[in-house]
Length: 188
Image (cartoon, rainbow, N blue to C red; front, side, top):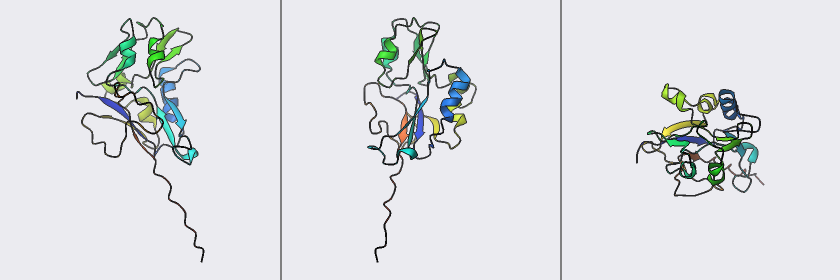
């Protein structure tokens, strides 16, 4: 496998503070209602204490990105490091990428009338810096790694409830929160 950078989301550490999403918004100044990184509480069917378990989600920078496949004007490119970049200037606003991504990563900008999405802050990476979301996380719940070479024991590609289009091979990996131990009472 070629180099493939991916986000690592440690749900054991995430506190649902939305700092990652705010950092992205502060760097890229998306229009109102456009969010490239979202923070979702885990459903009670997945984890019984939803106020304590969160998923921080953005573009998965898939190995075989459907957004790139479906774009009629080649506004998407995949870099050598696996980052999927969208050229908003080349975008014609057809919405194919928005409709085809099972993860909802590309968003239609209603003002610009073009799609946009997380670029993993490739400019920051090229400058030797972490993406804004990773850099801003106060608890270290987000990181990036070359998933083709990283040791990812204990990390999963498809957490419960996550779409599983295996052909796309999304690069984001997740560490699930530990289940709370049952509290035993002394009935004596």
